[in-house]
Image (cartoon, rainbow, N blue to C red; front, side, top):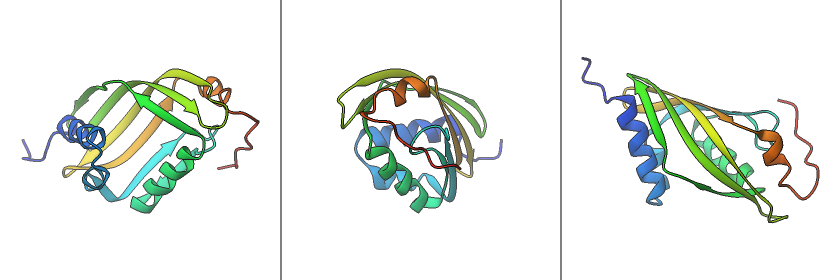
Length: 139
């Protein structure tokens, strides 16, 4: 055993901090060069890098939706972690909502999250909550 924190423990703590409203504490669990991928078909889709990228991704998401996330189910082995959540996204402009499962693949190293790849079950359903057609920039 390397003495390195287990990835499941890191992702569990990340969720705890976000749920407690401790965004700054959650950010400390992200490697400075973290990479996050969202589906390119969503308005906030694409790759985001670093803490500034995480903030930009959050701001892009918040332009369109609010969401609630049910308790995550977290599985993993070492630095490879899978998180499954059920999320309800409510479009700010239209008020329409959709609930989908979301799978996130985490890569954890030295006690920090270095990569997250996000897979929403039905991006078409989520886009259907928006009031108008959103032009998604090419990634």
